[in-house]
Image (cartoon, rainbow, N blue to C red; front, side, top):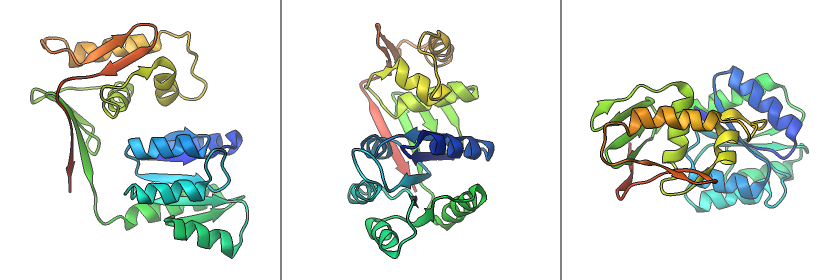
Length: 231
């Protein structure tokens, strides 16, 4: 399961990320409300951990905008002030739960589990580009109805690109998403993994889906781009 953490205090966001990854969650981080909103609207997350006090856009405003955009991802609000007014504002904006700083990490994990259990309707978004299909629920990938075996990082890279069909994924974007905040841009590791993916996804097929944008990054593209939602 993938969790988005929107927290501008780097020490806290890294603490949460490290702890949740040890609990076997995939974690992405945004450091301001605007980036957090764009990521939450574009990507499919299982849960969002959202600080109230954020630059560019407050957590309250971000949550309200997500609900207006019909994004129903569960939200846990983080607040530095344990006041009824803050709690009411957060819940009225569409948050599902709240937690006051400082908090015990064990309590955060318990609240995450409780919210995820509460979700009665499980939606599986199957990503499809041409005859390439990716199922985020099962991590199965098929091209022309033939299953493709990917490593963990290969799968995350493909999932990241397929959620942005036709858009350029820069080396910095890919590096920070797959390898983390401390990714070194002068490394050739991205080129290596793109090469791995091409051998598995494009080799043997006339229609190549992974394209290089010189000096910028990569994109996945085809004439047919679909997103199929199953309930």
